[in-house]
Length: 226
Image (cartoon, rainbow, N blue to C red; front, side, top):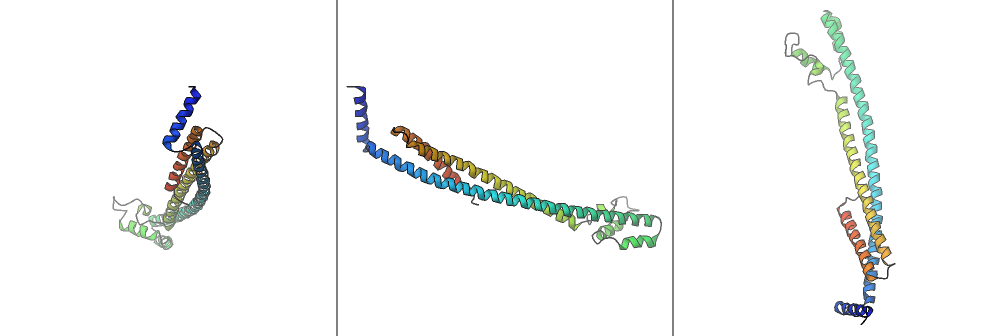
């Protein structure tokens, strides 16, 4: 008995045990290939769509972060100008007070900004001329609080949060792109499988395509939707 005859007998025995003919196996493999192609194409489109959506979210958040930082810088600059005004008026008052010119000292004191007044009053109450534990100036008092400084800090915090959201959106978009690549590979394996006549090769290629499809499907199920 020749080797080819033996191979044919083995193949017929396998077909008999499995209850499936070669044609039946081909039909099942073709059906599986069509299913993989359809699902992979659909999920690839979905991954591409989501990648685009998350890139838009990223751009929006980065733009928002930039605008907030500009506003924070403006508020910080305003706080700096206000502090400079307070320093100049306090220095002028201090010079007038040291010179004993009470009228000029009162003139400057009346022109203190409202945000500086509480810190100045608290500093005076600590008797800085006789109390060694008194703070060096009103600017060291906890009462010296500028609304512009608080606003700048708040805006900077919001900008950092927006930038972080943009970074996360960028990562999600990249993950969707990588997932689309995996699904494109699934399409490749499923598409090229039909070019081979040997069922074992077809089955192996479709198996790779199916594995990549399942990985892509599992990954998409875990990703947030934009």
